[in-house]
Length: 173
Image (cartoon, rainbow, N blue to C red; front, side, top):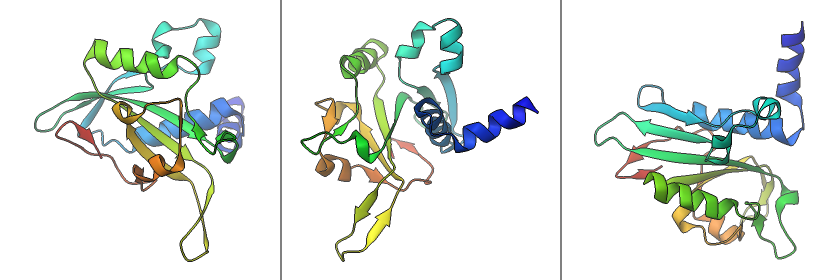
């Protein structure tokens, strides 16, 4: 019965760690097992509470593309709510030092890093109607300059929430 209750809690919980884990699992599910191998994956908060695993400082997922041309890349998943916007109207993404740590990881491993963001919010459309999220964005780390992003930057990288990912020419789509 305990496993059942844990699964229910993971499905409906508003705990930030559980919401983040749900999003990370969703992102991973959008990479076909036929074409992508999970090379590394960060450990859960539960594992890290027992004994912290240093590699948890790396991006959430590292994939190898098994198709023509191959390639390895990393993905950092970020769930954000409307409360994540600061007073300047920018979406806060990274804690101090985190962005630089991912840049260093990318250089040391010689792999591109992509930041995939879920924004669980509402958006006003041009015709005045409202569209509800979640919204997803796929931003190359190389395009991120600051710990927070303006909505105009996010718009350039929006993608359908449930669309499978594909890899071509060193880019993640």
